Length: 430
Image 1 (cartoon, rainbow, N blue to C red):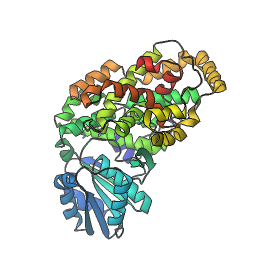
Image 2: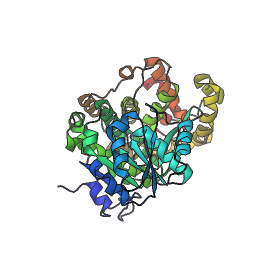
Image 3: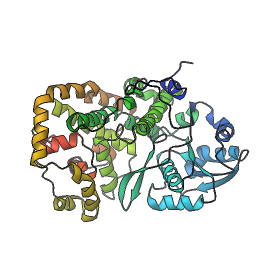
Image 4: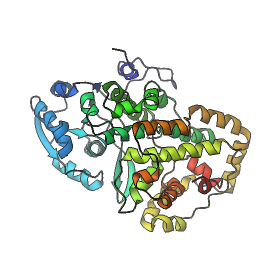
């Protein structure tokens, strides 16, 4: 079998392009292979996480894998099944419920994908307990990250969370996952180019930290996702393996650089806006579906800005009162506190304009070097059947335009949304 980049990383033979030294992941065991579920007792037993393990699942993940894991672990520990309702919410209330149910346990075993993993890693972080995860779908990249997306007081936040002791990915289970979940994972993965361009823009313009390593980790498997994504949707195990490694390595990249910067930029701000403020009658969409739609928007926005002359920035025009009018006073209060540090006054705009005028050629060349064209992204999403327009996920054009033109005010993270808005072009391009 051909050795993968993940294999080299796990045995300490992958060299960080930023530091020039070998990188060791902060996770004791990562297994991405067929038949992993049949080794659950040995894999978990080797970690020595304690005598009483909580296995957290919902009805769907229980039937797919959770009940089998619980039975297997009964041979190495006392097992306390924690059964959440169908479609649990990743919110503070559910975290509290899990903490109460696992108070007497030594460690948490999450069986699921995005929501269950986020809930367990955050509950484990608050209680200072170890946790591990058995994946059930290749739908998102949070299995190996040190942050969790949790809704607190109606505001979705990326919170510090526990790094898992083990991540166990059975490719047979993932290949049999619902096709919509596989498509969501593809959508979440293909935001790499727009997220990298946004993060690099911030570095080149504002001198914020930037790392190349998270993106170098993905280089080996990304071509398969761009060129043959339909194979993963069809359940081809090798293609699902490429997708699974991409998701695992994306999470490791976030952990490696201490934040979600390499995988969550303008496209995720738009997605978070939709998740937080979509009309009540909007059909539910997976996170990866929303990210795919927003990635197409960011790719076109980046292309349009880079095709023109150096942007000329003006002081930020948004006020807290106007933001409250757009999204409501309660949400605006939290958003404004996060956004305020990146507001531009006249002096700040002048400083950035001088840099843009002097360095736009070099900045543009560096950003184009990491980009993937909107047309190529669209072809990949179409091949996989991933939605890429607002209408395809049940979002009307007026609301989506509001999302694109307002999303940047959620966080102190500088992206092409900021560059385009402060140069007066965002509304036009949106």
